[in-house]
Length: 95
Image (cartoon, rainbow, N blue to C red):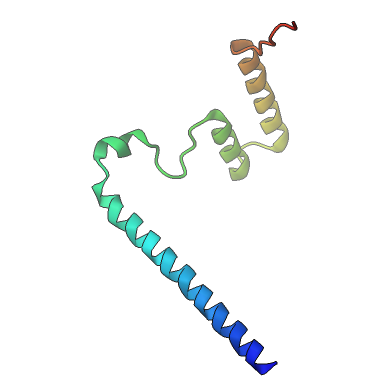
């Protein structure tokens, strides 16, 4: 019984060490690549936390308390209606 418990503790420690080592290498590789990015690539991508879509802006306003849930639902409904008019769903003909 005691041998099984010792084995399980050693196995757990080994697995944790493997996970930590793998994560450490991945984080280190990511940190090394960050300065090498060109300013051209970083100019195209939005800043972190900046929404890229209207839905993202609406969600941000909802979370910030600038609009309430009813206003959010109505805005998303209008957005869906506008999208349906601009890009109607075409159903293929039945054969």
